Length: 340
Ligand SMILES: *Cc1c(COP(=O)(O)O)cnc(C)c1O
Image (cartoon, rainbow, N blue to C red; front, side, top):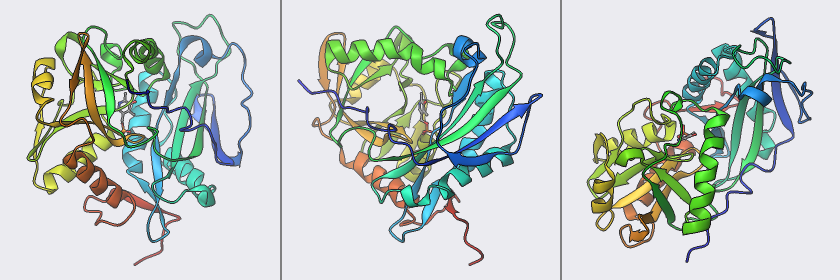
């Protein structure tokens, strides 16, 4: 039996400097960069009782040329603002959040590891109104902060993953699938823990009613020598920036891109002859070697990370590290370079 991968160390070391802002009368005030320190919070803070919190996750990469580049910052800022609105918290200005994240990289520049490591950025927004009676009232005041963490790979190694296929429970509630809200991860945890303990699974592939959606914190794709297939965007799952990037790259490399529903039946038929992978900022693109479904273990391909998975993973890392042309304007250098 496989030993489950460990993700315990990912994100457990913080870079020295964080960047914070807070609202006054619901409006964010000037941010500041300062050493990482504990938050001062009322024990009645809204986020602690009613889950008014959301997060983002993105990376800054050190290239072969030594330059540091943030990947698709604008898209992550946009999604954070959408998440903030969904949990009814004050929505930060895009320019403010953009500047805070850039500053979190710049202030920790010497802690950006060489590849394959990266500096993982974690913007976090929490409701802080001190009232334990506010279950039905949004928090007017919020604290926004950006943490940075030097990371290696998310999964302990590049070994192919084992996924438990969950065909009853969804990962999240239908109207919160696209939101990076803390409560989504808490509600998926029990399912993931059980799949690990009972089936040695590294992660859970949520496929309620036979509709393949995504795993606990990554999107899911099928691929082979000619095609990449993934669920079309709807409200049920998180719209990953990595997913979108992979589809652009795959199309550019000549793969046929299919965005459509995938049934568990198709998944099981695909497994023996194709590849499957998780895609996300933390996972990058991680190959799947086996599925556990209905008590049976089904091997995916030859059980190892497939050649197309490796090829696309390398293509994405190449763009992120400035080794491949940035055709779609995805990267921004930190600090900014002046002119050409
Ligand atoms: C963050 C996340 C992803 C991946 O999104 P990226 O933008 O690619 O990092 C996928 N699924 C879930 C549930 C997530 O939280």
